[in-house]
Image 1: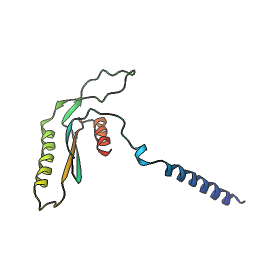
Image 2 (image 1 turned 90 degrees about the vertical axis):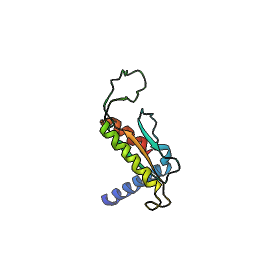
Image 3 (image 1 turned 135 degrees about the horizontal axis):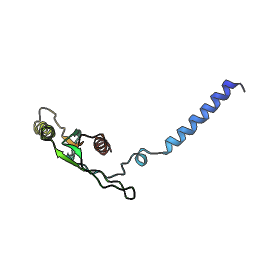
Image 4 (image 1 turned 45 degrees about the horizontal axis):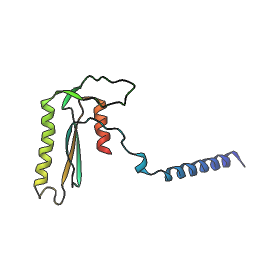
Length: 134
């Protein structure tokens, strides 16, 4: 066999193997959030067609933690209340509730919401985003 044919044959065998592996793995078994996060926020999702997610820095820092490497990691809590961004979250809740009350805006559709506190940190924002997406 020529070098080009050999490369095509190896590539096709490799693609076949990858396809077989991927077809045997279901999305449900691979995409599950296993951690439990200490998330603050508001949730109204029951019997809703569309869920809107919100991430606001309602607190502005993480509380000090006494974590050790011998125990299971725990999500750190937040402190330092931010009234301005709390109003933003309340405005989102109010707007969604008002939209749901009016039949002329979104007929036959109920909006829900999930609002999490990012504590002005990337780690809390990622925790909230992962929880919202799963």
